[in-house]
Image (cartoon, rainbow, N blue to C red; front, top):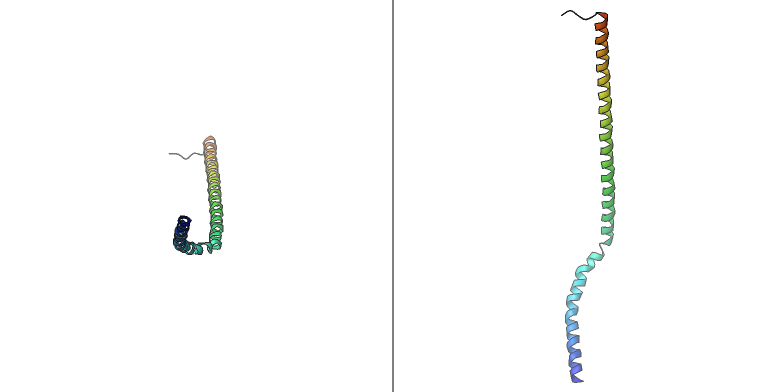
Length: 101
C-alpha cells in the first residue's frame, strides 16, 4: 500500500511538473486560434488573385489571337495589292503602254 501511495505521489508530481510546460504551449498557440478569420480572408483573397490571373491570361491570349488575325488580314491586303500591280503591269504590257528604257 505504501508503495502504491509513493507511486501515486510520484505520478502526481510528474503530472504537475508537466502541467506548466503544457500551459505555456497553450498560451503560445492560443493567439493562432484568433487568426482563423484572417487566414480565411487571406485564402479568399488568394482565390480572387488566382481568378484575376486566369482572366488576364485569357485576355492576353485573345489579344495575341486578334493580332494574328490582324496580321493575316494585312498579308491578304498586301497580296491583293501585289496582284493588282501585276495585273496592271500585264495590262500595260498587253496594251503597249510600257515606257521605253
